[in-house]
Length: 460
Image (cartoon, rainbow, N blue to C red; front, side):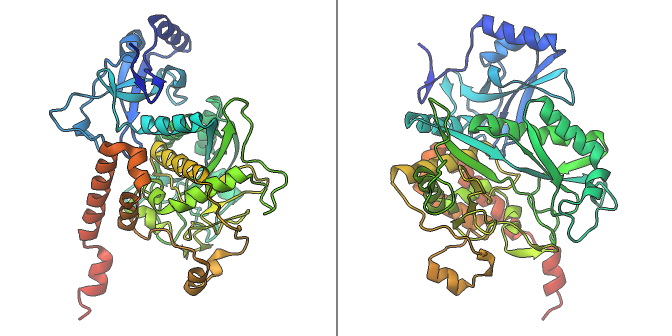
């Protein structure tokens, strides 16, 4: 009998299929398969397997002690978890073509591991499929390139402008490393359509084609790993810390989302006669309403670090605003809302996620929230086209607009209080996430910083 996960068949493949994959990779010069999964943070963990052992690995031969990792909730006496690689998702590493990376789903023996991030997303997208929907996702990837020195600085020494966004000179001074990153992405078929110097010194962004949510989450995990490796070869390091420089903007990972007809592929968020003028369908508005309803819980997963909440502030950047969302509202092509509908309509963009998020867990929360909005027939009201940054607190109270969590603790408490969170994560990952993030906040809160010493030591 084939083991299933919420109607999804076991990833185990026939020996013939595995042999065909191994032979195809070997013909491309691949020697080793990196059989991988991610921890709670979305960081890939792996064992390397020679291609002639791919058949065993595809059946879960490579065992991992979950208790040795962050957010793989197991006790030391539990049976090990084993990733079953997704043979259709293999990526030959452009920076080392002797290695093929395989994202995988964790199992324990013949049973899917409930707290596997990738399978959490698959459960939610399977739910969307029962309604006839495919969840499409595009992620804008922002990151820093810094010198690997005792005092890290922008990779280009002349990258010092107060407003460096879109600066061509500093973009070209970082061309060798950024070109290698973009060329690698295109070699993998990701279709980069633009890249630029972003609003902070040393900060860059790549924009590439959307895909279904599972493929996009796999790509984001590999992207971070790949950019680290490419930057290291150039003598730099890549930082995916949301806010590494206090007086500069942080690194987001804006989620661009839509639902498609699972049968035809047609975009179901498109509307040519939207009375609100955003070119978004009724289904799209219901999805937006669901995201806004669960925004605070989503925030804990999409902005998962103590440092994330130093990005989610209104001001604090030398260029003026931080460009990060603060208010739980939506609008048209207006970056002052948490959710905006870009020109052309047919999709929504949430600006809360940052580049440190686990994309599987964040995407799972978004699609589950959106489906709740659809099933409940919610409506988000009229879009905000005005500059939300200009409103006073009294104005926002009058409009009934709430603020996103201001700290990781607030976000985790909102996550824990929202029934959707446990529904999406399952008991094991829900409890592990709340426990880990609460302890992370406590460790930070109990730390006495240089700022406190400088301000208070001789104050009284």
